[in-house]
Image (cartoon, rainbow, N blue to C red; front, side):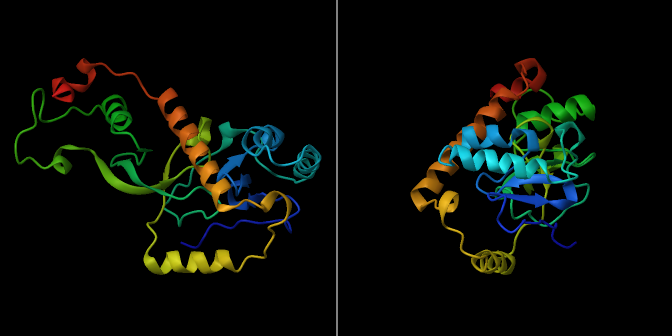
Length: 229
């Protein structure tokens, strides 16, 4: 399957690009999709170094772009495995994929709850400690180590979807493509390595926060006594 198309309007709406297949506006600095009516809030909270006048200009330009998704409830993740979407945050390689429905999570507790409630799964080992030598993959109804991305840390966009794992050749090609982009380091694009590292840390903490807030509550009874072993 070919790469998902993205369109950049000359840099006039930088740091945003249009992910045309999903009618999404994506911020390349944060790697997350943003609704048109949330552009100003996104910049005010995530990129405070962008001048107020510039933010207001971006808001007007974005409003003039037709056919952009206005409501996250209408957002649907890819139905088939696709190549990593370059304008989104880098793929995570620790995804868990339900073998029955394909739903993805990155926390085993969420996946276990999903399989118990949606697939009526019960652990074959029952209560107590795991049987020595029993392969975990035999009893788990999900696949581990799946590469995945998501459009946003919250709401409908927070659902993970599977992407292809990049080989060394693909990674090299991606780096060459990125290095061939025009240099637009002036103004809001002038982020040094230290600033980028700081931004990455902030976004990671925010992601962990949303994951904790959305974490389902499960008791020891739900998980079985082996969860406490």
